[in-house]
Image (cartoon, rainbow, N blue to C red; front, side):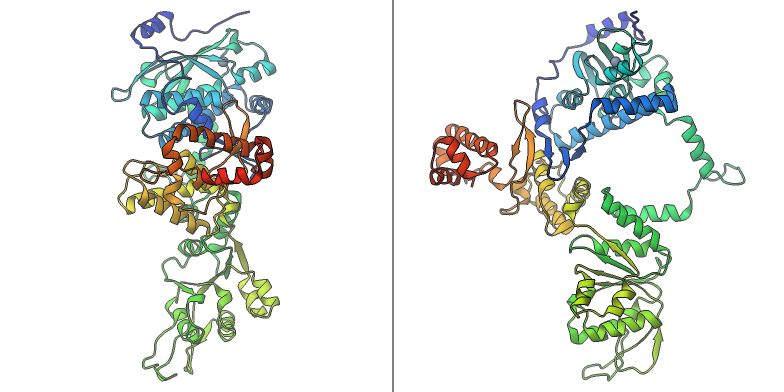
Length: 596
Ligand code: ZN
Protein backbone atom coordinates (compact mmCIF):
# COMPACT_ATOMS: atom_id res chain seq x y z
CA UNK A 1 0.00 0.00 0.00
CA UNK A 2 1.32 3.36 -0.93
CA UNK A 3 -0.34 6.57 -0.03
CA UNK A 4 1.15 10.02 -0.13
CA UNK A 5 -0.82 12.76 1.55
CA UNK A 6 -0.46 15.91 -0.51
CA UNK A 7 -1.35 19.01 1.39
CA UNK A 8 0.43 21.20 -1.09
CA UNK A 9 -0.63 20.77 -4.72
CA UNK A 10 1.94 19.91 -7.33
CA UNK A 11 1.07 23.09 -9.20
CA UNK A 12 1.89 25.11 -6.12
CA UNK A 13 5.20 23.39 -5.75
CA UNK A 14 6.05 23.99 -9.41
CA UNK A 15 5.04 27.59 -9.20
CA UNK A 16 7.40 28.06 -6.30
CA UNK A 17 10.13 26.06 -7.98
CA UNK A 18 9.89 28.32 -11.02
CA UNK A 19 10.32 31.40 -8.90
CA UNK A 20 13.13 30.01 -6.93
CA UNK A 21 16.82 30.12 -7.37
CA UNK A 22 18.03 26.74 -6.20
CA UNK A 23 20.82 27.01 -3.71
CA UNK A 24 23.87 24.83 -3.67
CA UNK A 25 23.43 21.72 -1.64
CA UNK A 26 23.71 22.20 2.08
CA UNK A 27 27.13 20.56 2.13
CA UNK A 28 28.67 23.41 0.21
CA UNK A 29 28.91 27.13 0.80
CA UNK A 30 30.44 29.52 3.28
CA UNK A 31 30.50 29.34 7.06
CA UNK A 32 29.18 27.78 9.08
CA UNK A 33 29.83 24.76 6.89
CA UNK A 34 29.23 21.21 8.00
CA UNK A 35 32.93 21.19 8.81
CA UNK A 36 32.66 24.31 10.99
CA UNK A 37 29.79 22.74 12.85
CA UNK A 38 31.70 19.47 13.18
CA UNK A 39 34.59 21.34 14.73
CA UNK A 40 32.23 22.75 17.34
CA UNK A 41 31.42 19.22 18.48
CA UNK A 42 33.74 18.25 21.30
CA UNK A 43 33.79 15.15 23.46
CA UNK A 44 35.04 15.49 27.02
CA UNK A 45 34.81 11.96 28.37
CA UNK A 46 36.79 12.83 31.50
CA UNK A 47 33.99 15.21 32.50
CA UNK A 48 31.27 12.98 31.14
CA UNK A 49 30.18 15.64 28.71
CA UNK A 50 29.76 16.28 24.99
CA UNK A 51 29.55 19.86 23.78
CA UNK A 52 28.24 21.41 20.60
CA UNK A 53 29.88 24.77 21.01
CA UNK A 54 28.44 25.78 24.40
CA UNK A 55 25.50 23.38 24.44
CA UNK A 56 25.71 20.12 26.33
CA UNK A 57 24.73 17.23 24.03
CA UNK A 58 23.71 13.64 24.62
CA UNK A 59 24.74 10.59 22.68
CA UNK A 60 21.96 8.06 22.99
CA UNK A 61 20.59 5.21 20.99
CA UNK A 62 18.04 5.96 18.29
CA UNK A 63 16.15 2.98 19.70
CA UNK A 64 16.00 4.68 23.13
CA UNK A 65 14.35 7.64 21.47
CA UNK A 66 12.08 5.09 19.76
CA UNK A 67 11.11 3.60 23.12
CA UNK A 68 10.40 6.99 24.64
CA UNK A 69 8.33 7.95 21.62
CA UNK A 70 6.35 4.70 21.68
CA UNK A 71 5.67 5.03 25.40
CA UNK A 72 4.50 8.61 24.89
CA UNK A 73 2.09 7.57 22.17
CA UNK A 74 0.66 4.73 24.21
CA UNK A 75 0.32 6.73 27.41
CA UNK A 76 -0.95 10.05 26.07
CA UNK A 77 -2.40 9.12 22.69
CA UNK A 78 -1.17 9.94 19.21
CA UNK A 79 -2.36 13.56 19.13
CA UNK A 80 -0.83 14.51 22.48
CA UNK A 81 2.44 12.71 21.70
CA UNK A 82 2.66 14.41 18.33
CA UNK A 83 2.04 17.81 19.90
CA UNK A 84 4.63 17.22 22.60
CA UNK A 85 7.31 15.99 20.20
CA UNK A 86 6.60 18.83 17.78
CA UNK A 87 7.10 21.37 20.56
CA UNK A 88 10.25 19.69 21.86
CA UNK A 89 11.63 19.72 18.30
CA UNK A 90 10.57 23.34 17.87
CA UNK A 91 12.46 24.43 20.95
CA UNK A 92 15.57 22.50 19.85
CA UNK A 93 15.41 24.15 16.41
CA UNK A 94 14.99 27.62 17.90
CA UNK A 95 17.98 27.00 20.23
CA UNK A 96 20.14 25.89 17.32
CA UNK A 97 19.23 29.01 15.33
CA UNK A 98 20.27 31.08 18.35
CA UNK A 99 23.53 29.15 18.65
CA UNK A 100 24.36 29.72 14.98
CA UNK A 101 23.56 33.42 15.23
CA UNK A 102 25.71 33.79 18.32
CA UNK A 103 28.67 31.79 17.02
CA UNK A 104 28.80 32.95 13.41
CA UNK A 105 27.31 36.44 13.55
CA UNK A 106 29.11 37.52 10.38
CA UNK A 107 28.02 34.70 8.13
CA UNK A 108 25.92 35.19 5.02
CA UNK A 109 22.21 34.74 5.94
CA UNK A 110 21.56 32.00 3.37
CA UNK A 111 24.47 29.98 4.65
CA UNK A 112 23.55 30.70 8.22
CA UNK A 113 20.13 29.28 7.42
CA UNK A 114 21.63 26.12 5.95
CA UNK A 115 23.33 25.50 9.29
CA UNK A 116 19.94 24.20 10.54
CA UNK A 117 19.68 21.32 8.05
CA UNK A 118 23.43 20.76 8.47
CA UNK A 119 22.99 20.48 12.21
CA UNK A 120 20.17 17.95 11.69
CA UNK A 121 22.62 15.97 9.61
CA UNK A 122 25.55 16.31 12.02
CA UNK A 123 23.35 15.16 14.90
CA UNK A 124 22.49 12.05 12.88
CA UNK A 125 18.76 12.78 12.83
CA UNK A 126 18.03 13.03 9.10
CA UNK A 127 19.84 13.80 5.86
CA UNK A 128 18.20 16.81 4.22
CA UNK A 129 18.67 17.65 0.54
CA UNK A 130 17.58 21.00 -0.83
CA UNK A 131 15.02 21.01 -3.64
CA UNK A 132 14.47 24.73 -3.53
CA UNK A 133 14.86 27.48 -1.03
CA UNK A 134 14.31 31.21 -0.99
CA UNK A 135 13.70 33.85 1.58
CA UNK A 136 13.61 37.57 2.16
CA UNK A 137 13.73 38.48 5.82
CA UNK A 138 12.77 42.13 5.25
CA UNK A 139 9.65 41.20 3.28
CA UNK A 140 8.93 38.22 5.49
CA UNK A 141 8.98 35.82 2.53
CA UNK A 142 10.07 32.29 3.01
CA UNK A 143 9.79 29.12 0.99
CA UNK A 144 11.78 25.94 1.52
CA UNK A 145 11.42 22.50 0.01
CA UNK A 146 13.62 19.61 1.10
CA UNK A 147 13.96 15.89 0.65
CA UNK A 148 14.50 14.15 3.95
CA UNK A 149 16.51 10.97 3.50
CA UNK A 150 16.82 8.24 6.12
CA UNK A 151 14.77 9.95 8.80
CA UNK A 152 15.61 8.38 12.16
CA UNK A 153 12.17 9.23 13.52
CA UNK A 154 10.56 7.27 10.68
CA UNK A 155 12.83 4.29 11.36
CA UNK A 156 11.58 4.21 14.93
CA UNK A 157 7.97 4.89 14.01
CA UNK A 158 7.87 2.19 11.35
CA UNK A 159 9.63 -0.29 13.64
CA UNK A 160 6.94 0.29 16.28
CA UNK A 161 3.79 0.82 14.22
CA UNK A 162 4.49 -0.16 10.61
CA UNK A 163 3.40 1.93 7.61
CA UNK A 164 0.28 3.96 8.29
CA UNK A 165 -1.65 6.77 6.70
CA UNK A 166 -0.09 9.77 8.44
CA UNK A 167 3.37 11.34 8.25
CA UNK A 168 5.39 10.72 11.44
CA UNK A 169 8.50 12.94 11.43
CA UNK A 170 6.94 15.08 14.14
CA UNK A 171 9.91 16.14 16.16
CA UNK A 172 11.93 16.83 13.01
CA UNK A 173 9.14 18.97 11.55
CA UNK A 174 9.04 20.80 14.88
CA UNK A 175 12.80 21.35 14.69
CA UNK A 176 12.69 22.69 11.13
CA UNK A 177 9.79 25.01 12.05
CA UNK A 178 11.53 26.24 15.21
CA UNK A 179 14.77 26.86 13.38
CA UNK A 180 13.13 28.72 10.49
CA UNK A 181 10.84 30.73 12.79
CA UNK A 182 13.76 31.89 14.94
CA UNK A 183 15.70 32.69 11.79
CA UNK A 184 12.89 34.67 10.14
CA UNK A 185 11.57 36.27 13.31
CA UNK A 186 8.05 35.10 12.41
CA UNK A 187 6.15 31.84 12.60
CA UNK A 188 7.23 29.49 9.83
CA UNK A 189 5.45 26.16 9.50
CA UNK A 190 6.86 23.10 7.82
CA UNK A 191 4.54 20.39 6.56
CA UNK A 192 5.66 16.92 5.75
CA UNK A 193 4.01 16.45 2.35
CA UNK A 194 5.41 12.95 1.89
CA UNK A 195 6.66 10.57 4.57
CA UNK A 196 8.11 7.08 4.68
CA UNK A 197 5.77 6.30 7.57
CA UNK A 198 2.84 6.79 5.22
CA UNK A 199 4.35 4.84 2.34
CA UNK A 200 6.46 7.38 0.42
CA UNK A 201 9.93 6.34 -0.63
CA UNK A 202 11.47 9.43 0.85
CA UNK A 203 10.15 12.17 3.12
CA UNK A 204 9.63 15.66 1.78
CA UNK A 205 8.98 18.84 3.73
CA UNK A 206 7.80 22.25 2.63
CA UNK A 207 8.09 25.36 4.79
CA UNK A 208 6.25 28.66 4.51
CA UNK A 209 5.24 31.44 6.87
CA UNK A 210 2.13 30.45 8.82
CA UNK A 211 0.09 33.21 7.19
CA UNK A 212 0.78 31.82 3.72
CA UNK A 213 -0.59 28.33 4.34
CA UNK A 214 -4.23 27.36 3.92
CA UNK A 215 -5.57 26.18 7.27
CA UNK A 216 -2.46 26.85 9.32
CA UNK A 217 -4.61 26.02 12.40
CA UNK A 218 -4.23 22.32 11.70
CA UNK A 219 -0.45 22.68 12.20
CA UNK A 220 -0.46 25.41 14.86
CA UNK A 221 -2.64 23.14 16.95
CA UNK A 222 0.42 20.90 17.45
CA UNK A 223 2.67 23.78 18.39
CA UNK A 224 0.45 24.99 21.23
CA UNK A 225 0.80 23.47 24.70
CA UNK A 226 -1.88 20.85 25.08
CA UNK A 227 -5.32 21.78 26.25
CA UNK A 228 -5.32 19.83 29.50
CA UNK A 229 -2.13 21.51 30.73
CA UNK A 230 -3.67 24.91 29.95
CA UNK A 231 -6.71 23.93 31.97
CA UNK A 232 -4.61 23.03 35.00
CA UNK A 233 -2.69 26.28 34.80
CA UNK A 234 -5.91 28.29 34.59
CA UNK A 235 -7.44 26.69 37.66
CA UNK A 236 -4.18 27.28 39.54
CA UNK A 237 -4.14 31.02 38.98
CA UNK A 238 -7.90 31.69 38.93
CA UNK A 239 -9.32 34.07 41.53
CA UNK A 240 -11.80 32.42 43.88
CA UNK A 241 -14.52 34.93 42.94
CA UNK A 242 -14.20 33.90 39.33
CA UNK A 243 -14.15 37.48 38.03
CA UNK A 244 -11.78 38.48 35.27
CA UNK A 245 -11.20 42.10 36.25
CA UNK A 246 -7.67 41.64 37.50
CA UNK A 247 -4.85 39.75 35.83
CA UNK A 248 -4.26 36.36 37.40
CA UNK A 249 -1.51 36.19 39.98
CA UNK A 250 0.71 33.34 41.07
CA UNK A 251 1.18 32.76 44.79
CA UNK A 252 3.15 35.71 46.12
CA UNK A 253 6.05 33.96 47.80
CA UNK A 254 6.86 31.99 44.69
CA UNK A 255 6.86 35.07 42.53
CA UNK A 256 9.04 37.13 44.82
CA UNK A 257 11.64 34.45 45.33
CA UNK A 258 11.92 33.46 41.69
CA UNK A 259 12.45 37.06 40.62
CA UNK A 260 15.06 37.67 43.30
CA UNK A 261 16.87 34.39 42.77
CA UNK A 262 17.06 35.07 39.03
CA UNK A 263 20.28 36.94 39.88
CA UNK A 264 21.75 33.57 40.70
CA UNK A 265 22.70 32.07 37.37
CA UNK A 266 22.90 28.33 36.87
CA UNK A 267 21.14 25.13 35.88
CA UNK A 268 23.58 22.49 37.14
CA UNK A 269 22.21 20.12 39.74
CA UNK A 270 24.63 21.15 42.50
CA UNK A 271 23.84 24.81 41.91
CA UNK A 272 20.10 24.17 41.77
CA UNK A 273 20.31 22.27 45.05
CA UNK A 274 22.03 25.24 46.74
CA UNK A 275 19.50 27.65 45.31
CA UNK A 276 16.62 25.47 46.42
CA UNK A 277 18.01 25.32 49.99
CA UNK A 278 18.39 29.09 49.93
CA UNK A 279 14.73 29.52 48.95
CA UNK A 280 13.63 27.05 51.63
CA UNK A 281 15.43 28.72 54.51
CA UNK A 282 14.92 32.36 53.47
CA UNK A 283 11.54 32.84 55.16
CA UNK A 284 12.81 31.55 58.54
CA UNK A 285 15.10 33.23 61.12
CA UNK A 286 17.65 30.40 60.99
CA UNK A 287 21.35 31.14 60.91
CA UNK A 288 22.79 30.07 57.56
CA UNK A 289 26.37 28.99 56.89
CA UNK A 290 27.61 29.12 53.29
CA UNK A 291 30.65 27.00 52.55
CA UNK A 292 32.67 26.70 49.37
CA UNK A 293 35.86 27.98 47.73
CA UNK A 294 36.53 31.68 47.21
CA UNK A 295 34.88 33.15 44.19
CA UNK A 296 32.03 30.62 44.23
CA UNK A 297 29.42 33.31 44.84
CA UNK A 298 28.84 33.11 48.60
CA UNK A 299 28.15 36.83 49.04
CA UNK A 300 25.73 36.89 46.10
CA UNK A 301 23.89 33.97 47.67
CA UNK A 302 23.81 35.76 51.04
CA UNK A 303 22.42 38.93 49.42
CA UNK A 304 19.81 36.89 47.61
CA UNK A 305 18.85 35.10 50.80
CA UNK A 306 18.33 38.49 52.43
CA UNK A 307 16.33 39.89 49.53
CA UNK A 308 13.82 37.02 49.54
CA UNK A 309 13.54 36.92 53.34
CA UNK A 310 10.96 38.81 55.46
CA UNK A 311 13.87 41.14 56.37
CA UNK A 312 14.25 42.33 52.79
CA UNK A 313 13.31 45.89 53.75
CA UNK A 314 15.90 45.98 56.52
CA UNK A 315 19.62 46.58 55.98
CA UNK A 316 22.05 44.01 54.57
CA UNK A 317 25.43 44.56 56.23
CA UNK A 318 28.44 42.60 54.98
CA UNK A 319 31.65 42.23 56.96
CA UNK A 320 34.78 40.49 55.73
CA UNK A 321 36.28 39.17 58.95
CA UNK A 322 39.65 38.58 57.30
CA UNK A 323 39.91 42.24 56.33
CA UNK A 324 39.66 43.66 59.84
CA UNK A 325 42.72 43.59 62.13
CA UNK A 326 42.29 41.46 65.24
CA UNK A 327 42.51 44.49 67.52
CA UNK A 328 39.65 46.28 65.77
CA UNK A 329 37.30 43.43 65.06
CA UNK A 330 35.37 43.70 68.33
CA UNK A 331 34.71 47.42 68.07
CA UNK A 332 33.88 46.99 64.39
CA UNK A 333 31.26 44.30 65.07
CA UNK A 334 29.85 45.43 68.40
CA UNK A 335 30.53 49.15 68.46
CA UNK A 336 32.41 51.22 70.97
CA UNK A 337 31.59 53.62 73.82
CA UNK A 338 33.32 56.96 74.10
CA UNK A 339 36.51 56.64 76.16
CA UNK A 340 36.68 52.85 75.96
CA UNK A 341 40.24 53.12 74.82
CA UNK A 342 42.65 55.82 73.72
CA UNK A 343 41.27 57.26 70.51
CA UNK A 344 37.65 56.28 71.14
CA UNK A 345 36.56 59.92 71.14
CA UNK A 346 32.95 59.30 70.26
CA UNK A 347 30.57 56.43 70.77
CA UNK A 348 29.63 54.61 67.64
CA UNK A 349 27.48 51.61 66.80
CA UNK A 350 29.01 48.45 65.37
CA UNK A 351 27.88 46.40 62.40
CA UNK A 352 25.50 44.39 64.57
CA UNK A 353 23.55 47.49 65.50
CA UNK A 354 23.66 48.79 61.95
CA UNK A 355 22.13 45.52 60.74
CA UNK A 356 19.19 45.98 63.16
CA UNK A 357 16.06 44.47 61.59
CA UNK A 358 18.08 43.07 58.71
CA UNK A 359 20.84 40.60 57.91
CA UNK A 360 24.49 40.60 59.00
CA UNK A 361 26.74 38.71 56.60
CA UNK A 362 30.03 37.57 58.17
CA UNK A 363 32.36 36.46 55.40
CA UNK A 364 35.49 34.41 56.19
CA UNK A 365 34.16 33.71 59.64
CA UNK A 366 37.04 31.32 60.41
CA UNK A 367 39.36 34.34 60.63
CA UNK A 368 37.63 35.78 63.71
CA UNK A 369 39.77 36.00 66.85
CA UNK A 370 38.89 33.74 69.76
CA UNK A 371 37.60 36.68 71.83
CA UNK A 372 35.40 37.89 68.99
CA UNK A 373 34.12 34.34 68.51
CA UNK A 374 33.01 34.33 72.16
CA UNK A 375 31.17 37.64 71.80
CA UNK A 376 29.54 36.49 68.59
CA UNK A 377 28.35 33.32 70.30
CA UNK A 378 26.76 35.38 73.05
CA UNK A 379 25.10 37.67 70.53
CA UNK A 380 23.64 34.67 68.73
CA UNK A 381 22.44 33.00 71.94
CA UNK A 382 21.05 35.98 73.81
CA UNK A 383 20.30 38.34 70.94
CA UNK A 384 22.06 41.04 72.96
CA UNK A 385 25.39 42.76 72.54
CA UNK A 386 27.55 45.08 74.57
CA UNK A 387 29.65 47.81 73.00
CA UNK A 388 33.37 47.79 73.75
CA UNK A 389 33.79 49.79 76.99
CA UNK A 390 30.05 49.89 77.45
CA UNK A 391 28.02 48.76 80.42
CA UNK A 392 24.51 48.44 79.04
CA UNK A 393 23.26 45.60 76.93
CA UNK A 394 21.67 46.38 73.61
CA UNK A 395 19.03 44.05 72.18
CA UNK A 396 19.66 43.22 68.55
CA UNK A 397 17.25 41.75 66.05
CA UNK A 398 19.68 40.53 63.43
CA UNK A 399 19.82 37.43 61.31
CA UNK A 400 23.38 36.20 61.00
CA UNK A 401 24.55 34.62 57.76
CA UNK A 402 28.14 33.40 57.73
CA UNK A 403 30.48 32.09 55.08
CA UNK A 404 33.80 30.32 54.99
CA UNK A 405 36.10 28.70 52.46
CA UNK A 406 37.68 26.56 55.18
CA UNK A 407 36.38 23.36 56.65
CA UNK A 408 35.12 24.70 60.00
CA UNK A 409 34.90 21.22 61.52
CA UNK A 410 38.56 20.80 60.76
CA UNK A 411 39.30 24.21 62.32
CA UNK A 412 37.44 23.07 65.47
CA UNK A 413 39.51 19.88 65.63
CA UNK A 414 42.66 21.93 65.40
CA UNK A 415 41.51 24.18 68.22
CA UNK A 416 41.25 27.28 66.04
CA UNK A 417 37.50 27.66 66.12
CA UNK A 418 35.10 27.38 69.04
CA UNK A 419 33.06 24.24 68.86
CA UNK A 420 29.99 25.82 70.47
CA UNK A 421 30.03 28.65 67.92
CA UNK A 422 30.43 26.14 65.11
CA UNK A 423 27.23 24.38 66.20
CA UNK A 424 25.42 27.71 66.49
CA UNK A 425 26.41 28.65 62.94
CA UNK A 426 25.99 25.26 61.38
CA UNK A 427 22.21 25.22 61.80
CA UNK A 428 21.58 25.34 58.08
CA UNK A 429 24.71 24.78 55.99
CA UNK A 430 24.59 25.42 52.24
CA UNK A 431 27.56 24.28 50.22
CA UNK A 432 28.44 26.08 46.99
CA UNK A 433 30.40 23.94 44.55
CA UNK A 434 33.52 25.12 42.72
CA UNK A 435 32.86 26.15 39.14
CA UNK A 436 34.67 23.16 37.64
CA UNK A 437 32.06 20.95 39.31
CA UNK A 438 29.23 22.85 37.68
CA UNK A 439 30.51 23.10 34.13
CA UNK A 440 26.99 23.11 32.74
CA UNK A 441 26.65 26.63 34.15
CA UNK A 442 29.69 28.01 32.34
CA UNK A 443 27.86 28.83 29.08
CA UNK A 444 25.10 30.65 30.98
CA UNK A 445 27.58 32.62 33.06
CA UNK A 446 29.63 33.48 29.96
CA UNK A 447 26.53 34.92 28.38
CA UNK A 448 25.56 36.92 31.47
CA UNK A 449 29.06 38.38 31.93
CA UNK A 450 29.47 39.09 28.21
CA UNK A 451 26.29 41.12 28.17
CA UNK A 452 27.14 42.85 31.44
CA UNK A 453 30.63 43.96 30.40
CA UNK A 454 29.74 44.73 26.80
CA UNK A 455 27.20 47.17 28.21
CA UNK A 456 29.41 48.49 30.99
CA UNK A 457 32.35 49.18 28.65
CA UNK A 458 30.11 50.21 25.73
CA UNK A 459 31.71 47.58 23.50
CA UNK A 460 29.22 45.59 21.46
CA UNK A 461 30.78 42.13 21.24
CA UNK A 462 29.00 39.51 19.12
CA UNK A 463 30.19 36.53 21.16
CA UNK A 464 32.97 33.98 21.60
CA UNK A 465 34.81 31.97 18.96
CA UNK A 466 34.20 28.20 19.16
CA UNK A 467 37.83 27.84 20.25
CA UNK A 468 37.33 30.29 23.11
CA UNK A 469 34.21 28.42 24.20
CA UNK A 470 36.14 25.15 24.22
CA UNK A 471 38.96 26.72 26.22
CA UNK A 472 36.55 28.01 28.86
CA UNK A 473 34.67 24.73 29.02
CA UNK A 474 37.82 22.77 29.79
CA UNK A 475 39.52 25.30 32.05
CA UNK A 476 39.85 24.41 35.75
CA UNK A 477 38.92 27.85 37.15
CA UNK A 478 40.92 27.88 40.37
CA UNK A 479 39.36 31.31 41.03
CA UNK A 480 35.84 30.08 40.28
CA UNK A 481 33.09 32.41 39.07
CA UNK A 482 35.10 35.51 39.93
CA UNK A 483 37.87 34.30 37.62
CA UNK A 484 35.45 33.56 34.77
CA UNK A 485 34.04 37.04 35.27
CA UNK A 486 37.54 38.55 35.06
CA UNK A 487 38.41 36.56 31.93
CA UNK A 488 35.25 37.68 30.15
CA UNK A 489 35.76 41.29 31.18
CA UNK A 490 39.35 41.13 29.93
CA UNK A 491 38.10 39.61 26.66
CA UNK A 492 35.53 42.38 26.18
CA UNK A 493 38.25 45.01 26.69
CA UNK A 494 40.84 43.31 24.47
CA UNK A 495 38.66 42.39 21.51
CA UNK A 496 38.57 44.53 18.36
CA UNK A 497 35.40 46.07 16.92
CA UNK A 498 32.85 43.43 15.83
CA UNK A 499 35.31 40.69 16.61
CA UNK A 500 34.37 37.65 18.65
CA UNK A 501 36.35 36.98 21.82
CA UNK A 502 39.11 34.45 21.16
CA UNK A 503 41.42 32.54 23.48
CA UNK A 504 44.24 35.08 23.33
CA UNK A 505 41.91 37.94 24.33
CA UNK A 506 41.25 36.27 27.67
CA UNK A 507 44.19 34.03 28.51
CA UNK A 508 47.54 35.75 28.67
CA UNK A 509 49.63 32.63 28.93
CA UNK A 510 49.92 29.73 31.26
CA UNK A 511 46.30 29.39 32.24
CA UNK A 512 45.09 26.89 29.67
CA UNK A 513 46.45 23.40 29.52
CA UNK A 514 45.65 20.71 27.02
CA UNK A 515 43.23 18.29 28.60
CA UNK A 516 41.47 15.22 27.43
CA UNK A 517 39.00 16.84 25.07
CA UNK A 518 38.22 14.90 21.91
CA UNK A 519 36.86 16.27 18.67
CA UNK A 520 36.08 14.79 15.29
CA UNK A 521 38.80 14.78 12.65
CA UNK A 522 38.07 14.94 8.93
CA UNK A 523 37.57 11.21 8.77
CA UNK A 524 34.92 11.47 11.50
CA UNK A 525 37.09 9.80 14.15
CA UNK A 526 37.59 11.19 17.61
CA UNK A 527 41.04 12.67 18.17
CA UNK A 528 42.52 14.67 21.03
CA UNK A 529 41.99 18.36 20.54
CA UNK A 530 44.38 20.92 21.92
CA UNK A 531 43.06 24.26 22.93
CA UNK A 532 45.46 26.66 24.48
CA UNK A 533 47.66 29.63 24.08
CA UNK A 534 50.05 27.59 21.93
CA UNK A 535 47.23 27.09 19.46
CA UNK A 536 46.87 30.79 18.85
CA UNK A 537 48.20 31.93 15.50
CA UNK A 538 51.01 34.44 15.75
CA UNK A 539 49.56 37.92 15.63
CA UNK A 540 50.69 40.47 13.08
CA UNK A 541 54.07 41.95 13.90
CA UNK A 542 55.17 39.20 16.22
CA UNK A 543 55.48 36.44 13.66
CA UNK A 544 58.29 34.12 14.51
CA UNK A 545 61.33 33.96 12.21
CA UNK A 546 60.96 30.37 11.09
CA UNK A 547 57.33 30.96 10.18
CA UNK A 548 58.16 34.07 8.21
CA UNK A 549 60.67 32.16 6.11
CA UNK A 550 58.27 29.45 5.02
CA UNK A 551 54.85 29.58 6.53
CA UNK A 552 53.26 26.88 4.36
CA UNK A 553 55.95 24.25 5.01
CA UNK A 554 56.01 25.17 8.66
CA UNK A 555 52.18 25.00 8.86
CA UNK A 556 52.22 21.45 7.45
CA UNK A 557 54.98 20.48 9.80
CA UNK A 558 53.12 21.86 12.80
CA UNK A 559 49.99 19.97 11.80
CA UNK A 560 52.02 16.80 11.38
CA UNK A 561 53.60 17.13 14.83
CA UNK A 562 50.30 18.01 16.40
CA UNK A 563 48.58 14.95 14.94
CA UNK A 564 51.46 12.70 15.89
CA UNK A 565 51.38 14.05 19.44
CA UNK A 566 47.64 13.61 19.66
CA UNK A 567 47.77 10.04 18.41
CA UNK A 568 50.39 9.26 21.07
CA UNK A 569 48.45 10.95 23.85
CA UNK A 570 51.05 13.71 24.14
CA UNK A 571 53.76 11.31 25.14
CA UNK A 572 56.82 12.95 23.59
CA UNK A 573 59.04 9.85 23.79
CA UNK A 574 56.52 7.66 22.02
CA UNK A 575 55.84 10.33 19.41
CA UNK A 576 59.60 10.59 18.76
CA UNK A 577 59.84 6.83 18.28
CA UNK A 578 56.98 6.93 15.79
CA UNK A 579 58.65 9.75 13.85
CA UNK A 580 62.05 8.09 13.96
CA UNK A 581 63.60 10.96 15.90
CA UNK A 582 65.38 11.10 19.20
CA UNK A 583 63.36 12.49 22.07
CA UNK A 584 65.69 15.52 22.26
CA UNK A 585 65.36 16.20 18.53
CA UNK A 586 61.61 16.10 18.69
CA UNK A 587 61.50 18.22 21.83
CA UNK A 588 63.65 20.85 20.13
CA UNK A 589 61.34 20.96 17.08
CA UNK A 590 58.22 21.07 19.20
CA UNK A 591 59.61 23.97 21.17
CA UNK A 592 60.55 25.79 17.98
CA UNK A 593 56.94 25.51 16.79
CA UNK A 594 55.57 26.47 20.14
CA UNK A 595 54.07 23.03 20.64
CA UNK A 596 55.95 22.28 23.83
ZN1 ZN B 1 8.93 11.22 7.45
